[in-house]
Image (tube, rainbow, N blue to C red; front, top):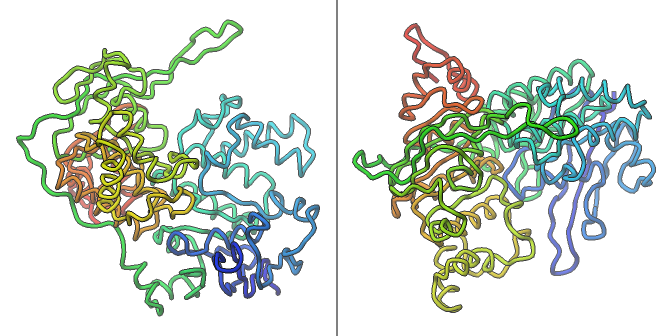
Length: 541
């Protein structure tokens, strides 16, 4: 029986002549009906370019297929007519993209975006489409969003946005689902649910799955075969168990050996408090009716009390929508809140916007999506310099440029890169730029909101080492938000576990990870580390 999808000697180049970049060189692999094949490798290895080639979604004429063939059920896709590709995309072959907020239309409700695929390919009635959207949202664990059909993408958390994308991709029961980092933005418990969902659908619908990921744990538990890519070439492929237990290529061995490890430098128990809050609340009103009267509230943060001392990292973990990012924004006075907030001993909860401005240099944030938080119209030097200009720091233009060069070197980037633009960098390099933008102001307190979630494992380890070195040198206090508990274990001194806006458990990181007390925390740890409890309730890896 012929394979469902066959890629043979695929090569993709960007640009021409001396500026030509060979993104993919001679890639060859197949996917059978109902099979899961994983494509793994570091940022820039050519995984996404290969996947986008299947649906002919590369930007032409900048990108060219210099050689190769892609056939779906024996039909050649390279060079296929726009009409034929239109009938295949989103119907027989669907794709889940890596960055949900960039892929979802910010002006259209989630209902309109999911139902659009149904209207386009199935010509469904409004009633049938609505019923199918309800079914899809329940399928991906977003039953609570059914009452929010008219909500826009930005009104959902990162994990919820990703589940909306998955619902869109599954709408027409495709033969092949291409999932480009489908669980990057999801917390561990939802990751497990989504992967189980994809596997169940694959078996029930006999659907093939091309899984692109940097998470080798996901590959091991999900894929039947794996292709390892490096610098545009597939350097090794085979049955997943064979590749993981007996890797042949040096790059595969490097990938399998690299993951975030170690622990932060012990914090000073007598250090002063940098950031604290007491009974902090952020409630969003739910308004209904013609007069838009408030009928209830979404309690995103509900009575939180925390304390972060100098040189300490407080890890904040919990599922998507638990209030982690809202808590961080409230602490930085970027979100209206009730309760008290103290920064370096000074109450800041009642300060005006103008009064807060002098304090902004000492409290910085690194966002989850590095590409989305960097202006595409500004060079790296302009991006990093912006904070210095706002706060009148760094001296004259020449002095600022010297300071930018020194900061880039500190975060592991070459100073010669400062005049390039964000799109010219890999995901890991862009995250280093975001860290440099915050670090150049030498803040006392830094919020790190999922700073490694979009990065492959080896780059995660590099970023963690960088952040720990910065903390050791400058005594920075971190509020570290992440759904990846392995990364939190390598970074945090203390951990708070959030669920539905409340803290359900808090304490030293080692205690929370090895001996969780609450059922919710135990479920989180079990999903993250594949832990099992002994008779005393202590969990071990």
